[in-house]
Image (spheres, rainbow, N blue to C red):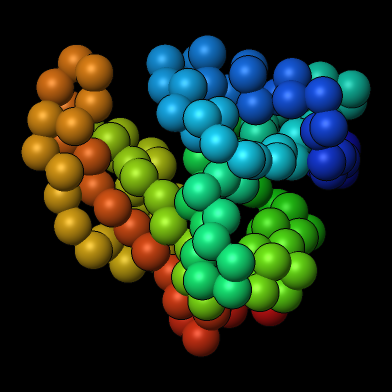
Length: 140
């Protein structure tokens, strides 16, 4: 399998692609930036950094079409960006309560479930709030 290429997407095309597929454009409401992940010249995932509060936290929105996007190099880049370059003390994200694959991934990465937003999604699904503190990250 070929290596995943990581690009900072200044055009926002990957953020729009991710939000269209997720059916949620809220990550694009304020300031944000996006990493686009490519394999063989084709976009396979996007990671949007939004809701950044200087020296405090950032929200992640992730969309992928290839379960192999999440390589060790990708994870090191993403976590170093949040915890070192942005100097955040925590990363936050939401996962639909019925999305077993995403729930499994974020738990394996070390995120901790911190709450449930009942009937939060457009179609009435619950969303779970996850967080990771810098001290809990094993990818740094």
